[in-house]
Image (spheres, helix red, strand yellow):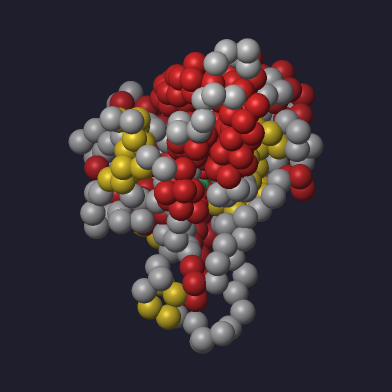
Length: 350
Ligand code: MRU
């Protein structure tokens, strides 16, 4: 089954409602910026590269009905639409990158009519989608060199088809390795609190015929101690100039465990996830989410005393010294990260 996470169809964004998986494969058809904002906030669409495409298209949704008479009013509407979509989630660099890409096109063509700029913004948003498809395949090609026949690989959250347009970053590496005939086993951390690992990663890997086993997040150490995994690969939401990497909460603990057990720990992400303005992980804003994600199981059943305090950071930062390599669409980056990232990734992350 070919899965497309997000596309532009009949003047609407067609996207998989990921909160319904794995039970139902349901699509949302969105033609209003406020509906897209909600979909991002509630993780109906999620994963850094998919958010890049959503951000670019979200700006278009925000200005498509704007007044075209005056350039000044249009420019104001464009700023408002961009700020609005950018306020949906703070951590994934790609969301802002997608927005910046379409804004740059508007800037480069500011002397054209608002009607023309609208058209150019949509065209650029569609290029963001196409470039994600291409980047993920390149990540797959570079990354599959790191995967050997009979590897057992641990992953966290979902950095697959559902986090991108149609292929994935960390899981793209595994899809490519499988296509090259390597036999692989994957262990997916369930990824509390929203279970992207068990709901999404296990769903797509199973669909793709990859041997997948779900574990609770607190079982990773045992898996390594028993020699059941020999590699870890995860995606990224934002990578600082020195290689420090923000990804789903729990990624850092996997990196610490991998180092203790001398297992390679890899990150896979496109250039658009790098934020060279953040010198280190300390410059990355970590989203904190609502209490019900923790005090209830998927908003359905209370699993903590009413009113108990919760702490719910959605991401953590893995220090660069724990990362064996970062697989990008421009090649594999290794230590020393600051120097090698600068060499491979340009300032705007393109
Ligand atoms: O909160 P989410 O589900 O958007 O978090 C997603 C992740 O942490 C992914 O690993 C990351 O965005 C990389 S996706 C290729």
